[in-house]
Length: 263
Image 1 (cartoon, rainbow, N blue to C red):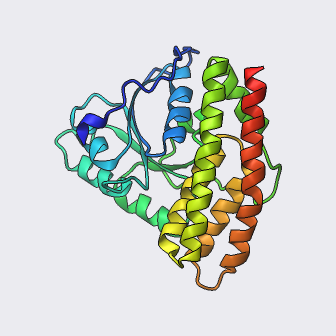
Image 2 (image 1 turned 135 degrees about the vertical axis):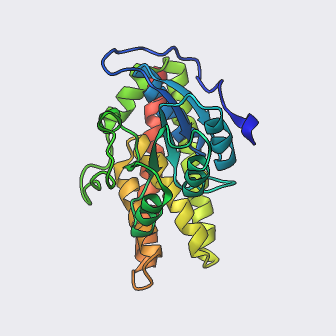
């Protein structure tokens, strides 16, 4: 598992060091490929050195090697959940040294409790932003995004275009559209089967991906559904319908953005 450190996930870019804060050696643990790629690009653009892993055991193994200033740990990782991975890291001989921030797409009550109890130093809600990272909070999550607002953040796409060659940015946007389509199909199947745990996990993934790529309405809908699936009294059918209604426009937005990036 420890051999799954993705040193090569640079998708054809060279880091643009922008100066400012001291560059950090960062361990990034994130299982969703398109979210991991976008976060890595953002961090490397700021001049940080990044080792990326995609599951909990790989994160624990990488942390054991030492040398990290900061660990960004997704809460819901395969193999070993992020909070359990943090506990394992803290038990290592050098485990008290790195600062650990949990990453989560939806700051639900259950998620906040898991982050607080894990031994992490703080919690960041996705999408990862450099201003939030530079403040490196030690207490509680960032403020939740507003419940209403624009459907899309074109600034997220502009940032992607600035940080990557056009062909790579377009490929990543197309790939993200495909991932959201797959998640949507899996979510519909889980809801039809009455599998609330799986549906909640997929809604969480949708929230993380959509937020990173500027699909704000879809992110709001996914966060609402995830929270609703934890509350028996919530109108889960309505929340699922609202998410489905924002999914196709989000996929269309990403595909149009990819096509425009290629032009």
